[in-house]
Length: 43
Image (cartoon, rainbow, N blue to C red; front, side):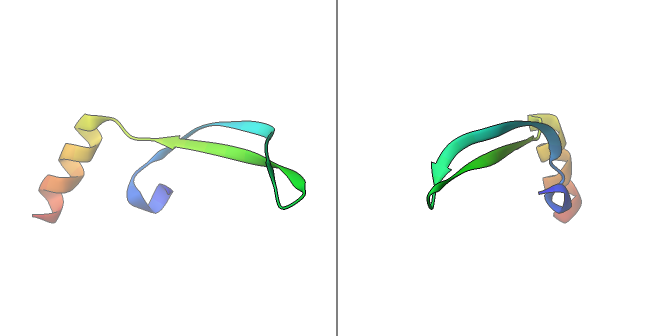
């Protein structure tokens, strides 16, 4: 996710039950301004 320009925002420990175990969820985000700047660089 960091390669896409997103920043780490947080983590929920043992938040979801998957494949017989509780799994952590990590959240990443990007502001609209950062997204627009990234799009302009690729054009």
